[in-house]
Length: 228
Image (cartoon, helix red, strand yellow):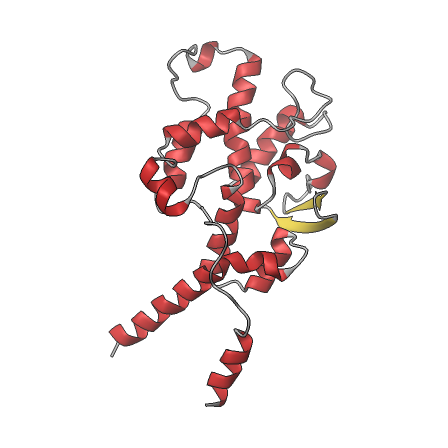
């Protein structure tokens, strides 16, 4: 009884409904999206990979690298597009210090195993410039807000089919932030911890992922029943 009361208090006031759908990458969708973003893929209307000029090659590589960066950090698009090399641990390649201008705070994120070689390759090429994602036309400036290529890849991957949009909502670059959060919640990380990693100014903003916690509990309950 005491445990039941404690759990009731822990979830008191926690509403599982949200005012808008929270779209994130589902099983198999990440592979489809990254396949469409592969900078070395053959693209109708473009020269073969070995014949593409530097600007086009950089744009295609940027799109792929940014999607991995966004998915593995939960950062907002502009936070990644304008991240300077001074924010990256280029000695041990373990952390990223991210300043979140939108909410006026900063936080430290760990570099994942798959993001590390991407950053190292970019450092070898762009380390003498200020930004991780420099503009292809002005290497001293940041890439800025440019999502058209990523949007087209999302559509090619079928992530915004009418059926998917109707059921789950439209997939955008911001959905990669939701993907980061959803994977952590489904992995058992608390909503409080996720809110800190996302840099939310209040835990209320993180409650949109509460339904994922409920889904995890439901699966644990099924596992218990199946084991009887």
